Amino acid sequence: MNLLLDTHALLWWLFDDRRLTAAAREAIAAPRNRVVVSAVSGWEIATKHRIGRLPDAGAAATDLPALLKRARFEELPVALRHGMAAGALRGPHRDPFDRMLIAQAQLESLRVVSNDPVFRAYGLAVLW
Image (tube, rainbow, N blue to C red):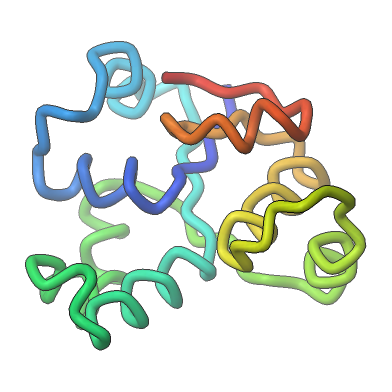
């Protein structure tokens, strides 16, 4: 299974937060699954840490590449086609981070690990 972690799922995994469901933990930990983290999650973490909305995410805001490598997660860069697809998404959802994750999940055929209902609203496969 190819998984794309939503930013909160990534942080909850990295910091062993119990809000991450058992099903999500099992899927992320399974060696047979490919776990992908979008560059947009790095942008979101750094931005929200800087403005005080993620005060406890300092380690992730400053050393995310090392944390991803340790966790055996792959980085997913933002490509031009991702940006174009995110910009063209229909619907009222305005969060630019979510819109990019939606576009990447659609284009890369990834199942999203998230408790956010917006991903299902865009017809994506979601694991939670």
